[in-house]
Length: 306
Image (cartoon, rainbow, N blue to C red; front, top):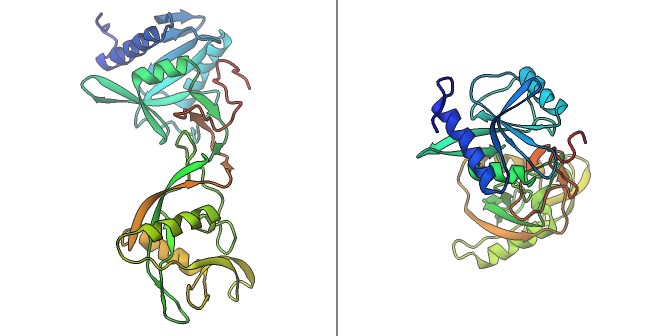
């Protein structure tokens, strides 16, 4: 089948890629379906209400997209939008459950991929089938997964009081949810919430240092110490020899430099978290192991107005 004169080859290829993926997944999808005031590139039945896949490669603003989405809803159809990667929609500041909107790009050899924010990239085939199955779901919060692969960066810091060398460490990447969403806990200076001070991370750093075959890593200790600068106690790194506090401000400055390179040693460690935490990040969730960020998460076409 060839594209019509008004349809670009790329639009045609994406549309029929969705159609073929839905058919292989067992859905009797139809191309160029029409309803009252709307047309869908592909209309697929699901276990809930039908899904209308709409490939939008030409410019279209947010207001018009929402208006067209409302026409789908009024007919008992759930719209799913695929915009060209790099498209910017003014005033669309976060992902939202009432407007499933994703970005598609060509990967070469006529293949296409769809991105779920900055979390995952799926082939068009996988995306279309999994969305129709209801396995791409919306969650309002990102919840940390119980086991994290963390990047530790170690750097040099002589003690300001006794002069002995210490090697504090920092996390080179944030905590992640099972769907790869960032789920970093809230942190602030001069508090007890810094991720590097968590007992599970401290133990992982100690284990890494003990097994490290390169330069000997001389870890500072982590304890509650009083800071004369801020006038109260907080968890902190301290000298391994004289126990003098390494203030969070100095640690923060050192970490800012290390982020641009120059770590003494670095490595990835697996950390079994002692607790999980969540962060309010609305997102379309697609974990590899069905560990959705919210256990009650449902695709919008099963519960469209919740």
